[in-house]
Length: 135
Image (cartoon, rainbow, N blue to C red; front, top):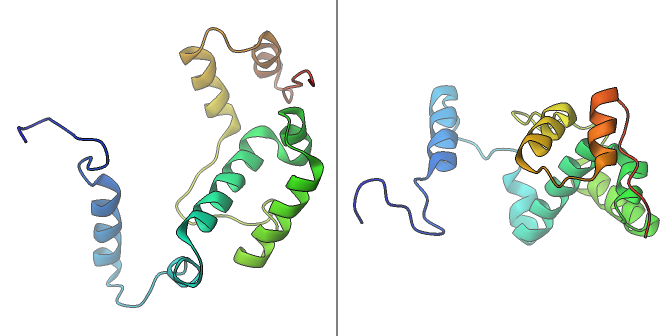
């Protein structure tokens, strides 16, 4: 593999290098908090709940997820699972080192995707939550 070439799945290991650097700088020898639930269950469950957490914050909680088409029962189920795994409601929990900014997300989405629904653009310009039409 030549310099500058990346293959799918390999990348250059930035996340791994950052974690190792952070752990080394803090002289951590014990398990980090996320390792225990990761070992206790499938990795996809933890990452799914982390994705739910990000979506919860980016799209404005329960109402925003419902506007996007997620069923209320699924939202309640995910919130309950999140509380079971992380001990707090997604509104109250903060992942250390993770910043979720709906404003930055909308700005980037608007600049990258000119086909984004007009209602999102209007909501971002006026500082209001997006109100996507229901199906």
